[in-house]
Image 1: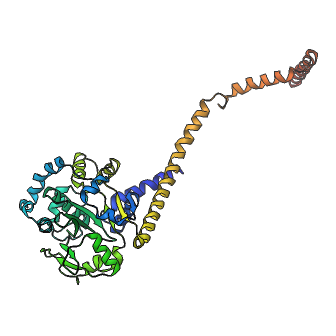
Image 2: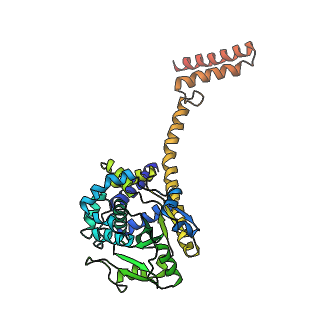
Image 3: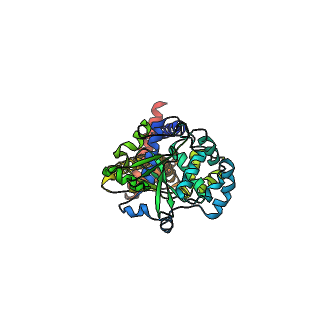
Length: 373
């Protein structure tokens, strides 16, 4: 049974690590399990609109100034947009950052690549939404913007903080999209979500210039990502924008497989957790994530118990062999023990009775030998 369970576990590991890049469904399932483990919840919507300084006081992960300074020349070497910092309006800065690297995205997997390699690949149109958000956070940090990652049910996008407006502003770095209300005021991702789920109007600004970017609300990709209000019932904030710290640690152990590096990032508390807004709209998603967590714990629990029982049984067996009370006896030991038992039983009889019994046994033995002769 031990070998059967070990074989099943090995097969699962091979399937997961060997197929997750090419199989979208498997990759999505792994993301759901990961999110269920990393998820925390809050019913207070004000937490999601807190300023960057307020978030940092509540353990929001950020890159240090020294880390940002170390990465600035490296990133500007591949995306030379040094004039971004001189733009007075944060919206114009965010547009310049997006236009500096984003070429829409053709969903070719690049998430296992190093950060600088990802920048090069997104300039060629490759990558998922999460890759574009990661690069946007990194380029924002080295160009004087503070940004963060946000997700709805099917898509990842970003907020950047506008000090002139004293609020977060939504941006989709993959497709080059902003959003405003009826008066033309830029919306945060939380405001966009609230308007979508309550049916209030939203005006989208499509500023992407690449051929593959979304140009209107009639684009099927837009309808799949933003058109359906149910997509926004799930609202999740990645509680940290320390992508440069993650990239540095990943580079230091580049000899390890990507999966091992990701586990190291989680084990070292470098990866931030996910904070979900747990309001009435998100009840179904929260239950869904809790179910995934139960299933994952059940799988780990089963294999943990099944694989640990066999070594424990072997250890107990060896301890019993070493214990003289439970150690099995050899034939000579059993013979000696039998004689001792016989002597103990005879101790209760008189010497005459024992002598008479011995003589009778010997006499029968002599008669037997004489008869054979």
